[in-house]
Length: 342
Image 1 (tube, rainbow, N blue to C red):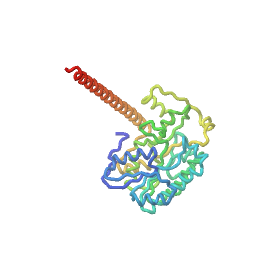
Image 2 (image 1 turned 120 degrees about the vertical axis):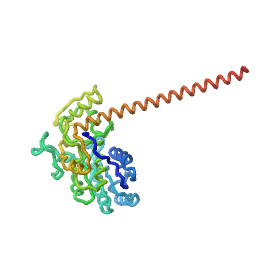
Image 3 (image 1 turned 90 degrees about the horizontal axis):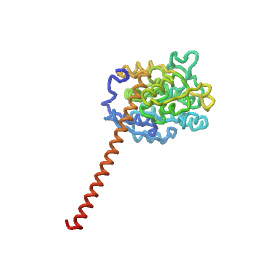
Image 4 (image 1 turned 45 degrees about the horizontal axis):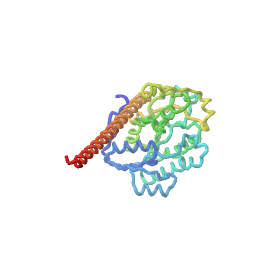
């Protein structure tokens, strides 16, 4: 069936997984999935600063992980524009910290998976919108944001190290309306551009990350669903499946550029390398349009399920309230009967 793995990602091996940046959005989804599928393994999280070498080494010495998932880094709040005005903090996390944590893991013989970004490219003459995607070996060509430049620099240093797996996410999406999800962001904008991009549906890709890490794979992978999808296509599916009354307005890239401090990467990533590697493990990542439709159907189902659970809670609360009132009435009746000597 398209969009589903042809084998389970549950393993019988015993690993010790450590998630760096454990308080983050992606980290939370990853921990839940590890807890559910890696039942014979231990799962830990930490929020220790990656650039603090002594603290990093202390955590590694205490937990002694077999695998580290690095979900940490500076993306900025509310968005990457923040990084333009906080360059030192951004470098400390996205360059110094990333490299320090990687180096500590390599020296300790610990496999490390880095959740990196694919926002290091932009469409050009050789990669036009609607044309071929960027492959992993091509040099980053997007210089429009300080955030992207720091991520590209860190990747350049880390990519050839043994035991390091670099997974390039783009515009990640979860099966809810979390504020960090790409869908939540664009549904809350006053206006959106309409450009095709590669997207990462976490439901499809996090199991693949666990699979690759558990088998100690290394190297750089474009970590998105195959294909590219435009903002308008995403919002049309959202309108169709989630919110029929939703409306949106477009504006041009030039108009967008006037209201942003930093540029935004728009590109398609080639996922051939990822698809071929996952095929070795009988795992299939669905095409992005199919993936979005399935994601929105899960979102609706999750929301309806939450509504039903909330309804049952309210019903139980009412029932308990009625039961309490009946007890009080009975107590009053008993007291009255004793007073009148019935």
